[in-house]
Length: 159
Figure 1 (cartoon, rainbow, N blue to C red):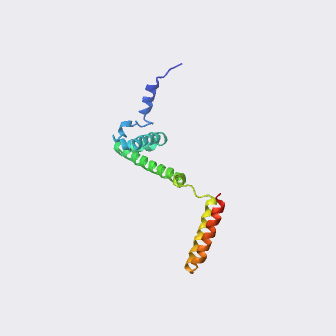
Figure 2: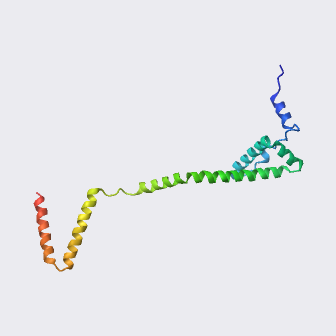
Figure 3: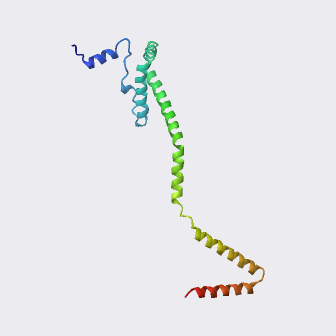
């Protein structure tokens, strides 16, 4: 039984004529903290491209496409993928964002009045409109008589 050293086996496989040599991760890092996600995604796209498009990558190396060109192309693809993902994610989250905003707005509003309070407010409004109409028609005496009867009725209820 033969035991193979995994490190030497992968190094030989990485430099074999069938597979191109991989670029190091450092080639994709721009050094800016804002670009770290794009840089790492660019490297992941590059690594995936080596696995799925090995022949195309070898052809690009044969044409003399430099390391900077590969890195730039992968960064462009990564930025496009991130933009597409962000657009799709936020487009799908719009309804949830709207519902949360409505909940926050409704939570800040005071409770609406109850049924009894609305009935009493309507009755008071009708009484005030009626009193204003009697006063405008010059029936001040009738208005005073009605107010006196209402006051007497109120005193009768207050024991």
